[in-house]
Image (tube, rainbow, N blue to C red; front, side, top):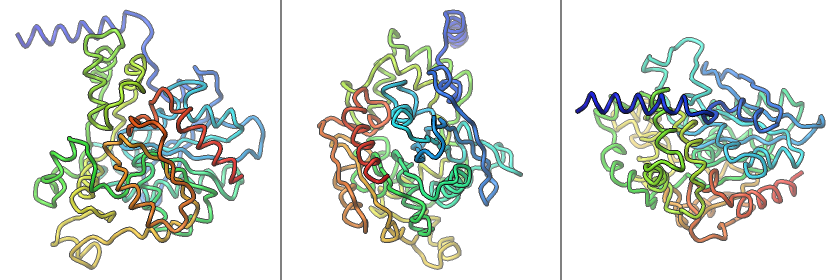
Length: 388
């Protein structure tokens, strides 16, 4: 029976390969296929991770610069996935921006280190704390040096908002390099998140213990060509498994079938999951348990060594002095309205409180919603232009 199932899966994938055009999985190839110019850049962080960025260069020199930073298990591909006229990267490019898309350590485009191979556990010994302290600053510095600009605009989704706030907490000098920060689905306080997956696992995985110590520094949801091909085949709009694929998305971010184009599912599977460390997920679980926005909890034994205290210190939101604009949804299972508004009330320069005017707006609608332009991106662009 098992052998027959394995043969069936192999034949399914062979059928996909022979059937015709496969969704493009590479971000740069997709951008070219969509008719835009593209550049690929690399920067090495001060702790020796090698990050890849994708750039849609402007038509004119001296154009204003914007950095887009993805969420957990995502990559630069998510900013172009919906195609011309719909994807945020293309909308900003058409508006005259010099568009840069970052990639955090451990994802598809940033699985490299000067000394450590990815099969060494130490490579994965990071959470989003390190992404905020090392990756985002290195990316910003490289972009500003390359473009000759003194400031840029920042747009982050989900974890891309978390790492921005971490950077500002720990490196407040970067406020001077930001014109405005647009946070989509802001993930800082997580105590009221509704995601059933997190709520189920957080009581165990969000507590420092031997199991967490053992598996924390490992890759989270590793992908390979076989899994990717199978996912593409199963998630085609005409597949009998398409609803299962859609429910996987809804289970994470909230149910909103009106905003999901089933034709996009196979393209999502071609690029996601893009890779992360287990510790990134554990850190979010800790946020749910503690109801605080604070550094990684290593346990009362190790915390004194890391922080000089038995509990992790809170991030210093008062340091985020560049203008912050919040965009959030009423049906977001990851970032509950009450959590976002707690963040809002603690920011020293909160420039916009924007509840998306669509009651079913969910967490992943910010990057894959069919009406993201209408409900979010047009507002983002309008606000960005006001800071130029």
